[in-house]
Length: 132
Length: 132
DNA sequence: CTTGATCCTGTAGTTACTACAGGAGTTATA
DNA sequence: TATAACTCCTGTAGTAACTACAGGATCAAG
Image (cartoon, rainbow over all chains, first blue to last red; front, side):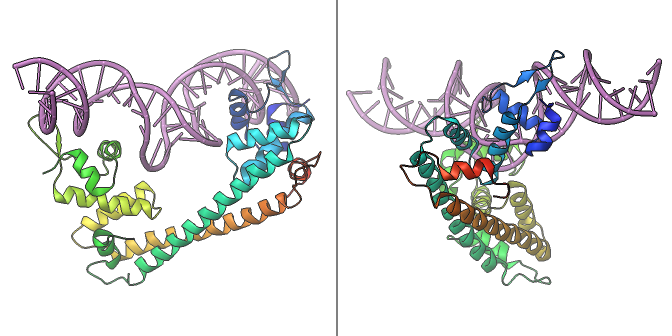
């Protein structure tokens, strides 16, 4: 059993974040030492690492919580996992499309933007053009 | 001079958001009618539309504020505008890259995920693999 | 015995809004 | 003219997912 600092190091989840997950009921309350300090098992650290990976993959915290619960259930519900993941993939793809559109619009805006202009063409377009 | 509801309709910025921009000093305080209601000029609405476009383009509110100020300055500083916009384009591009990486990782994770499995391979990998 | 590291609880700040609550004034209809 | 429906006002709190303290206790090392 290790202290919170060590659990943070081993999982990559910040100390304050670990306490936050506990407050929010994302992870169960850990054991406590006699001096009231939190004590984490290897299992606890595993949970934190699992959550970290989900978050790094862009899953929302509540999705991550669901995945963690599915992962701890007796019969892992693969279909639910896949549905959640594919909805997430879809949202990632649409975000990519949006950003590509943005990138294009921004490139166009700055195209004629050179120092020395008295009136900036980008600002001009931001002020006047209706469809960006 | 129009009321806040009409200004919201004409600019596409929500009423509460307009009041929020005022509180935050993003836009100047508008005139007031005798009954204390806000009154907006065409100029005020123009500012709101400008902000709306910046936000739609993904600029942060503080960037949008800077752009608005630049746009109202006597000599428009085209270089500053371009720098801000290009930094933003760069961050959009790196976000796109990140998301593409995510998309790839997620697709891999779900590849063998079919209903009927007792143990979900995606959860397995989330539990065990070190580099996602 | 002191110094510095780590831990505790509890609260507030972050971004950019959004959603009330509770009240007042305005406009349209019966 | 009464009343209903609408718009507006201020002020506060909630959202996501942390992050950053404040103020205090405890622990390990020299």
